[in-house]
Every structure is written in C-alpha cells, then in structure tokens.
Amino acid sequence: MNWKLISLISDIDRFDASWAAIERREGQSLKELKSIATVRSVGASTRIEGSKLSDEEVDILIKNMDISKLEERDEQEVSGYFDVLDLIDESYEDIPVSENGLKNLHNQLLKYSEKDQWHKGNYKQHTNAVEASLPDGSTQIIFQTTSPGFPTKDAMRELIDWYSTDIETHVLVKAAFFCYEFVSIHPFQDGNGRLSRLLSTLLLRKYGYQWIRCVSFEHEIESQKTEYYRVLRSCQSQRPGEDVSEWVIFFMSCLRNIQDALLKKLDSRGIKQNLSLKEKHLLYIIENNYGIQTSDMAKKAGASSATVKRMLDRLINMKLIERQGLGAGVYYTLL
Image 1 (cartoon, rainbow, N blue to C red):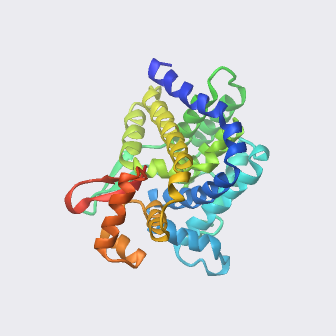
Image 2: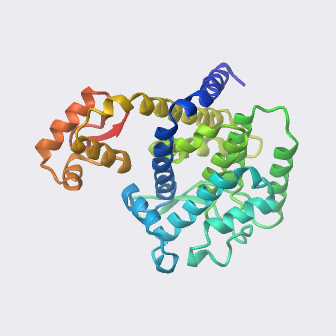
Image 3: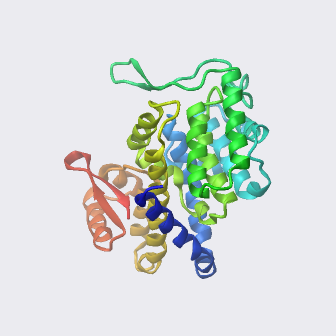
C-alpha cells in the first residue's frame, strides 16, 4: 500500500459514499446510463478478444436476440457475455465465488459457442499461453499460464481459499488481485479474459460498489488495451512471487476514470437538453463507435462532412467531446 494507491482508494470510496444520494437524485438518468453501459461492456469486452461487432451492432443483436440464428462466432460470444452480465446484475448476491460458481459462469459465457462445447464449464486440458498476433503473421507469447491438470486445480483452490478467508485486504485491492490471479492462471481453455472482466463487476457488486453497473469497466479497459496488456505482462513476467502493485494501481485508475466519466455525464444532462436532434444523434454515434472518424460519422448520421464538422466543433466547445489523434487519424471521444 503506497501513497498513490491509498489516494486512489480514498477517491473511489469517497465517490461511493455519495452514491445513495446520487441514485435518489438521478434515478431516471441512471436507468438510461445502465442500458448504455450494458451495450458498451458487452461490445468492448468481446472486441478485446477479437470480435469485430460495433456497439451499434451489439445493441441490435441484444434487442433482437434469437438463439436459433446465432451462426457467427462474434454473435455467439456477444450473446453469452450479455447473458452472464445480466445474470450478475439480477443475482450477484447469490452467485458463489467458488470453483463450481466460476465453472457455472464459464458454462453460461460459452453456452452459445459451438466450437467451445467440449470444454465449457471445465478446467483446461491443454496449455493455453496467451499469444499476440504480429503483423508478419507470426505469434508472440505474452505470458505463460499455469499448466493444465493438477497445477491449475491447485492454483484455483488456493485462490478461492484465500478469497474466502482473507479479512485484512481492502476489498478493492482484493478484487483487483483476484482478477489478476484468475487471468494469470487462465484456468479454462478459452474465455478467461472475458470472464475475468465479468468477475470484476461481480466482486465489486458483492462488495457494495453498485455504481459499477452504470458505467463500463470493459470500455475503459478497451480504451487502454495496450497498457492493459503491458501491465499484465510486466507483472506476470516475474511469476511466481511477483509484485502486483502496478496492476492494482492500473485497476484502481480505471475505476476512478469511469467514476469521473459518470459524474461528467450526469453534469452534462442539462447541457444536452439544448442540443438539436442531429447533435444528440451524433453524440450517440460517437459514444457507441469508439475511434470512429468524421467520414464514417457522416455516413451514419446521413449528413455531409462539413455539417458534421460544424456539429463536432460545437460539441467540443460545449465540453461534451474531445478530439483525439492527429491528421488523418483524428477521432472523437466523449468527455
């Protein structure tokens, strides 16, 4: 526990202490934010693992889900993720943090995926080192995971035992460490990254941080994907007995970032009431298509690029969005 970590935890808990009052004041707005957060969480977490579906496509799929027609792997992964997120939202208090509890969540996560039927809900049978695809078509191992068989079973048993008996660690640090250790063990053949992010939400809900469902932790991770993998790799390269301080601080920084984003969204409600329908639509497009550029915005908005640029300038001046990148790579994100 260094001073930076103590400061981050204090900021997060100070916000949490005011959450009940925020809920009473912003009830209807929070319902809308929760709906948006669900789509962003599902879209971001599956894209981190390679899905190509935009938030708009995810939203359409969730609203019109027909399990008999889920033929594409991206659609299967999105549907499974949505189901588990919905289960956590409805029943987080009743979901046990146990080996069987995690196996059941994994089974739900992959229940629509045809290629994963042979292993879903069971610990891995083969090694599954985490690899990155390089531009030349080759692969590079990011980190080695725990070996299958008894090493994985023993590691998971130790993790659950620690979680069940530890009463000294601050619960935010405990959640960060649990998710780190889970993804480092990589106990299942596939789906470990997605499940680790779902476990973040589950543990935070269990520990009383209910505001987490009005924001998207997964979207924050996606926006920092390079740093996310760098920090994981930096810590895991020291296994066993590594110092995970860097990961815990990264985890806390993400939580504080999404708290700040939530407050800004609530503060901007009055400003947004003065926007035109086209400007509101443009905000929706930016929010649900991370990294989208002006030409694509114009197509989705059905407007000329010149009109979109004028609206973007106005939204920037109103401090609702900000410009990212340079030259041809410029894109826009919500503040």
